[in-house]
Image 1: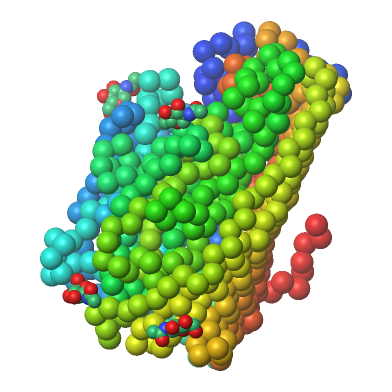
Image 2: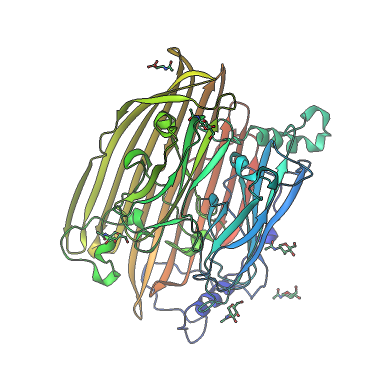
Length: 617
Ligand SMILES: *[C@@H]1O[C@H](CO)[C@@H](O)[C@H](O)[C@H]1NC(C)=O
Ligand SMILES: *[C@@H]1O[C@H](CO)[C@@H](O)[C@H](O)[C@H]1NC(C)=O
Ligand SMILES: *[C@@H]1O[C@H](CO)[C@@H](O)[C@H](O)[C@H]1NC(C)=O
Ligand SMILES: *[C@@H]1O[C@H](CO)[C@@H](O)[C@H](O)[C@H]1NC(C)=O
Ligand SMILES: *[C@@H]1O[C@H](CO)[C@@H](O)[C@H](O)[C@H]1NC(C)=O
Ligand SMILES: *[C@@H]1O[C@H](CO)[C@@H](O)[C@H](O)[C@H]1NC(C)=O
């Protein structure tokens, strides 16, 4: 695949003008700079005005659709303009699987293709099928008209939702999308098309049968075939997916969570022939928690009134999303700190989005050891909350269930449940605007249970380890801040039959985050921030089952640097460079993509099917 770089031409002058438009307050002339603090280099004078359209992108997934790799059929499932939709119910459309290519599918890809007509803020959005979430996303922060973008996601794991037809009595499904937009301040309207692409048969042709000039593509196709369609813990798509979401979807199916005592729940009856269960949790942080990862811990002492740091934003940089069954802990995850397109410095994320911004990571919790207590035919309450949270979070989950077609009921029991609390050491040492705080903790959780079905009497043991550290420091009267986070998790799943290990799943996640900011007075009540940021999401999965072993690793990294002038929370202008690398490797193939964005322009966009030329980090 080759990107036309000319497509990415980006005009700084457009940006400057746009940002001046974004604020109600404008400089006398766009070229008249605000007072420049010493030691900071301002962007060079802008070029002549241009009216190029600009593609915003997220270089984090190998191409899911390639030339020569055409879907068996494609459906446009939702088409909507979101202009003034605050408080409105989600956009909905009827969904039925394509009659000309019924399930099973070897792969299903969701494609969200969208554009912004004009300047607008970044907005949170989600797509649900019958109340079960299949994508959590944010829009870009369009700083000029003509912005468009595309999100592609492998949704094969939601096959159970997508294959529902009128024939099975459900009357087909409803697909809905929530995107609350307001055109009151900025005129931008978001136009969205949501499509599903269904693939059948083998996912790649043999390279030998292809002409030489297609060899490179063929290599990419082998990558495509190798890309994990089903994340390790799923192994194969579930037979049934039950949403743990707000049943009245009038304000979206996500639950708003205000604080950790605000436990949102759904009560469900689990089929009595369930033999495996995975809970997939989606979260996003908003309001006072938009920057939770950078919140210092300031239990006492003066607040930094000048920066508007209210006490609600000084509760420390730790959050944990927790799932419960009938009030009892069943699993948790420290969320990956997704940076929104308008957050930190919007110029870092135009036109390359931050990791996960267009396709938020979801968190998979293996609940198989609890199956024994869930299959008693009685309703069970699945709860969700976010520890240490401030208003507000949007949380929902999908309960993926695998059913035993060969029996009407299975039996099982939870035999081990060792859930020590995650104890955190919290330390804060502040004098006025200077000081530091640290939150640190780690825990190992273990549970195991057996389920006896036509597959045999299988014991599943889950060991989950969380290791977390947040360190936040402010120096120079609070003008220099440093935010560091270490966030590691390891999930070990052991599957045994008759005391013989028949399968193992290992998932390792690491998400370090580092951000250093120097701030100064920008004049006229504005603040000038110079920021250096480095973050990463690395996941390694290995699955061994039925004498087959597979391994894959994904490392998504970004390094950004630049400055921004903020006035009353609005970016007046700025600049940013972001270097992204995305590396995927498994037993068969490797894929590396490097995108170098300098001052709003994509200077380099390289992808290779070989990881020989690994970028030095
Ligand atoms: C803007 O677009 C129009 C139509 O494509 C073109 O004729 C014009 O030259 C463009 N202006 C600039 C400054 O690029
Ligand atoms: C906002 O969008 C609505 C619905 O399309 C439209 O009627 C209204 O005129 C728009 N308002 C502004 C200020 O553009
Ligand atoms: C949506 O699809 C229509 C055609 O069905 C197309 O004209 C339009 O440009 C598409 N919009 C986006 C944002 O992709
Ligand atoms: C937590 O949120 C709930 C629900 O909004 C609210 O009723 C309660 O007062 C909040 N508790 C605290 C301590 O803020
Ligand atoms: C399991 O559920 C099925 C279908 O709901 C029902 O017919 C069957 O009697 C149940 N079996 C037991 C042991 O409860
Ligand atoms: C399944 O195995 C467990 C542990 O090995 C045992 O305690 C249990 O009784 C067995 N259940 C059945 C139905 O055989």
